[in-house]
Amino acid sequence: GYQVYRRTAEQDRYELLGKVAPEYTLYVDAKASENVRYYYAVTALDGATPPNESSRSKEVTIRY
Image (cartoon, rainbow, N blue to C red; front, side, top):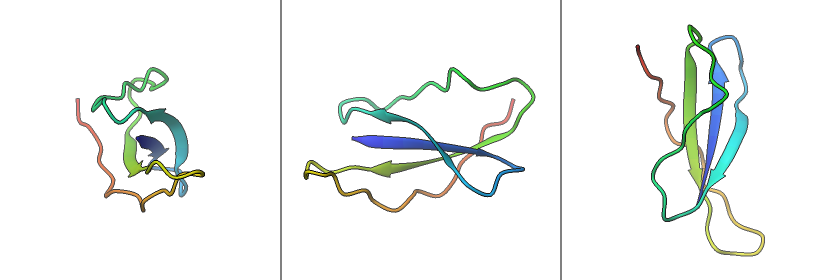
């Protein structure tokens, strides 16, 4: 599966938003506010117990 992280331009650290099952390729940030630029990154989790987490992806942002 995957874990989705988010930060704002004012934040130095990411916060964990949620986990996504491996069969999905979409995550909707339902808590995002208008007129705030967010930066997102994801990590991958394997099937081990406890799961191993990859390093974070490069961050991305969206433009309106």
